[in-house]
Length: 281
Image (cartoon, rainbow, N blue to C red; front, top):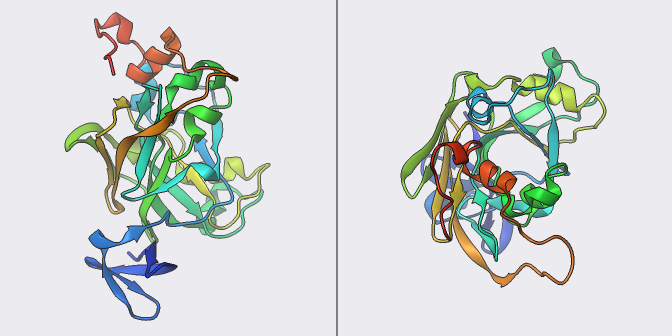
């Protein structure tokens, strides 16, 4: 299956094709994939994410799902890339990983059926739908700062075409330890459904990204952690967590909080019933 990556090569943005352990530019230049400075594999006009879609995640929170999916928006300023630094702002504690599969639109889609939606998908990549739950009390409806803060949407390493999303394993690792282990077969609504549902009222353009949901066991990260999301057939997306150099301003707007809602979401829904104490960070 072809895999395309966008990288910085000699100071220029270059689209490459992966050839084993090397990335090949259109002019023939080659660079080792492990040495390349990666960029997000696509340039979307929008990134749309589904709230809950994996059965294990639904069961973890004891939720009853509506008959149809619900969504939120991650601004394009949140985009990050393979090997990029994820910034946890100073004064915030509850930054959670969420390993996911991301689909990328290849042809403009508007009012398409699920049966035809696959014709509008260019390919797939890996996403980490990171969430800054310190702002969940004020942004739980929109998820704007929770999911849309800078650096909280790593995508990559590349865009893979011809990939079948059925029956694929998804794992997330923190410092080499498996922390999420799921499958695309857990998804309640598949990729084609998501495209058709969104495209009923929102035009999807080439490059637009839809995030398809995460399995159970999203938990907080701390500065210094290395987080990797691996999807069968798509590779492994690697990022590391750093602390922002300045604290979130507190002279206006909502401040980070540690309510029961924040803690229960960050620690898995029913932490207070399992004798788990919130870690100090």
